[in-house]
Amino acid sequence: MSTHAPILVYCRSWCGDCNRALRWLDEMGYDYDFIDIDEDQEARARCIQLAGKVITPTFEIGDTCIVNFDPRALTEVLGAPGA
Image (cartoon, rainbow, N blue to C red; front, side, top):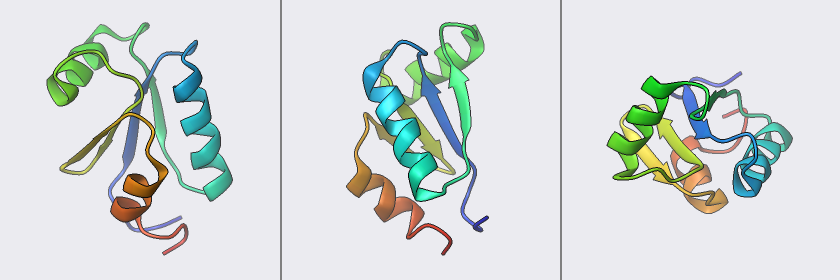
């Protein structure tokens, strides 16, 4: 849909903040890849590398990492949906 870097979202399926973040991304119309760190040990290691420890959700957008669900920070990095 847009030309920004791919959005990788490191989550856990049971995480309330993750579910809110994914719902927000869907509502805003952003395309993303959901990665369950409980199911994918390489992704878990990458999440730790990015955030310093296991924190979900962790967003990897190109060279940018956003830890925790912060709509303002995500919008700053991603721009308006469809932009």
